[in-house]
Length: 238
Ligand code: ADP
Ligand code: MG
Image (cartoon, rainbow, N blue to C red; front, side, top):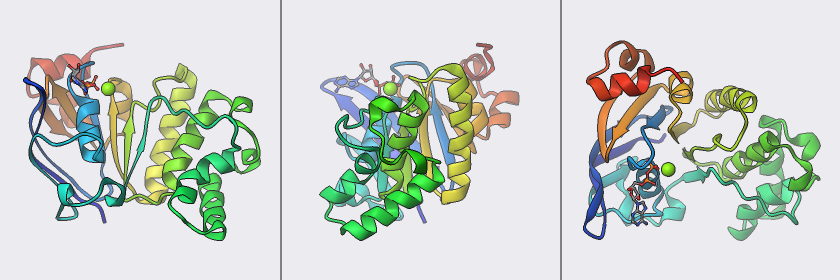
């Protein structure tokens, strides 16, 4: 189970308020995609959920527990970043198992979790390779693998596909949707790419300047945009 509740979530950097009161319920197994123009606060909001950024005001609860009262490492979240720097001197298996080694997970269980994740991500034949011998898409799958082995309740993605070329992005979108089904996971995904939002989301959250402009299933937003901003953003051809 993973239900997140954001209530009046606010973030200021100095005197500048960049997240201006976000209210949102994320239900178990949602695939929520935050979309909006560059600088609207998507990454900041994701980092607040991950516990990487302090909450200025408002409240975040995860399965009914206030997040500020829980150490970020035990929130049951795992984040996948846009720049998925892998350790160049480690193999795929070592990269995927590294966080577990640090957390003190015994070798046998570590190995089992890495193999299971590699199986899901079709990385099994590549487990002994080093990152420089992988394609961009394979590297991105390893980065996702590093999150999967931690068995999070919630995956947080910050523009994970934006470094990939167009064809690969299409493939990875399908893989992420398959992962969402197979892992029964809750996904919170940030992008500035309307197509990613339209194809993957169970619900889209359109953000504008630190606020939510509209929330709803993709087709609802497409056909019934709440305002001109949403219409322009979701409807605009690329
Ligand atoms: P997005 O991910 O939607 O492009 P961000 O969340 O990165 O937007 O940034 C939202 C706003 O907050 C931007 O104006 C950005 O300059 C500002 N911002 C982000 N991080 C910091 C920081 N550490 N200090 C000051 N301002 C920041
Ligand atoms: Mg960002």
